[in-house]
Length: 173
Image (tube, rainbow, N blue to C red):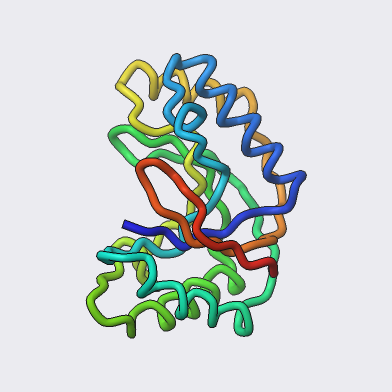
């Protein structure tokens, strides 16, 4: 499985990483930290046998995509075990989702996850995952105390392998 994700400006990245670190500390669940998962917002999740088939399509996005701004407005949960922060789905994010989907949907021998298609995608940045029930409650408390709405610039788009997270390609916007 491969992810195409948005990465943020340094200030937003630091703010998100502080939340990730704080959730890890307070819950005892350090999945995000120990697996070196950087703050990111997945735009597309693609099943493919080999990354080489994806590279030309992702590289072609370099000429099509531009940076934009997003407003993170609320903590959220993807039950049963993910805590996240959620942005407003604005026109920029919608267009980004559509452009990436259009580029990836045409790749033979791949499949785009049904959860990452335009109008089926719930934009979020994971702050903690694989949380057990009590850890989720502790994570909600952390975000209740620590989260404040903020704006971020999308600075890069990246292609990454998962489990463990490994960047394959990043495109500066």
